[in-house]
Length: 623
Ligand SMILES: Nc1ncnc2c1ncn2[C@@H]1O[C@H](COP(=O)(O)OP(=O)(O)OP(=O)(O)O)[C@@H](O)[C@H]1O
Ligand SMILES: [Mg+2]
Image (cartoon, rainbow, N blue to C red; front, side):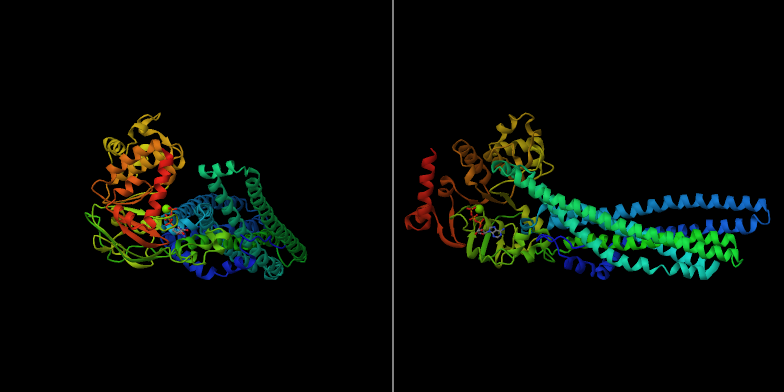
């Protein structure tokens, strides 16, 4: 059957390339599951014991048929039957123990993989998140993690059990009657040859299914958050969204049917071969019994054994398939765990204590790096990945500046000049490409990230709030803040009255990303949150959109309070902030083109004078 091709999906070639990794992967999985090895050993020992126990009943039956019954030995019949019961009870106990061990191992592995993934992913630099599709990432944490644990418990267990059952049964059979055993084995190639092919196809289908699931997840996480839902509605795209989604859901359905049919056709063929095998044993064995070569008991025991070798064979061929798809999952989980993190603490990084807030920029150049360096291709969308290696060129070009503790710096410049980018370099959301940024004389790359970030309070252009109460959102900045401290911060940020008038006050839950608040309210709440952190340096990216005249005065007052006694870098769109700044830095196309006070820059009649006149016109039209 031809696979369906789609630009977003890995081709057959990818799937097979993934499968050829299994040798290295096996070692990796082995190392990863090291702490479970004692339990795995116990689990496997139980499986072997169960397999050996399975040999007992046919041999007991043979004994009853060939010896107890002909010699009319009633005691022996009772004893043998009792042994059968004992074996069954022991088998039941072993099966419970086996299940407990496999569940403990499997769930433990899921836990390990999940917590490692979570830890690794949340430490990734911001560039990783700007490129990654959230839904795909979540899918790795759910579906693939579960797929991976199956490799270790279900699949490994069934492989071992089947191998042991197969070998011991074959040994028992050949001891009973080697010619009939050979006969049964002649049918073996009928199992093994198609199994290989089906295994490969099924693994490819599984990978395709996981990718489609991930892409559905992405659609849901993007469309079912407030901003996404708003876009869909305002642009009336329901029909198209529905079409795109059902297209993928439909392909998941088709894949499900295909893989079910692959599995079942194969299973049916095997059952058929098994039945034929048993018939052949009885055909040939029956004649041998009539001619007196073997006993009835031996034939019956062989008849039972022969079904016991075809079952594990079926299991083994399926195990191959399961193992391959489980390894696909492991592969995908490791892919995320292996993603390199370029922003890590340097060995011997120092803790910054009592920051003063003196900042120097020393010939800072910055360029957003290409996708390959910061993300995983399979977690990006195809369109994005295609453009990922196109270099964007430098966004900041040779910035030199010194900011004294306690100064208020206004960063101004046209849209796209690099203001936000520059502000993000300070707390090391990105690393400079060349040059250096120093805080209190330390290169920020020599400081621990935790202590560096503790020195900064950032209020971004579009502040984010979690879907939680106002108080919980504020305490994100300082978990042990008292109610009084929350209120003080909110009063300073001129948002206390608003919060107090909400239905549940500070316990009011703000919707996802704060969608129950106006833009200005959200920004003031973000300022309050930042104040709770009490940072040495404040970075404020004023949002032009929240500049309505009613909020203006409140935000202005909040700012004055927030910036008092701290180094402040404000990406300013408000005249009052700009004119009151100790130093104005004018950025244009990544270059620092002008710097100084309002009066001198305005008098110089350059880019700043132009920007200023535009702002004056804008504010005049507002009032
Ligand atoms: N994550 C990113 N990856 C690649 N390029 C980016 C990224 N973020 C911003 N850029 C580019 O860097 C340049 C500077 O963007 P930046 O956001 O710093 O501008 P800005 O001065 O803050 O503009 P605005 O006033 O509109 O907020 C722009 O050309 C932008 O396209
Ligand atoms: Mg910006």
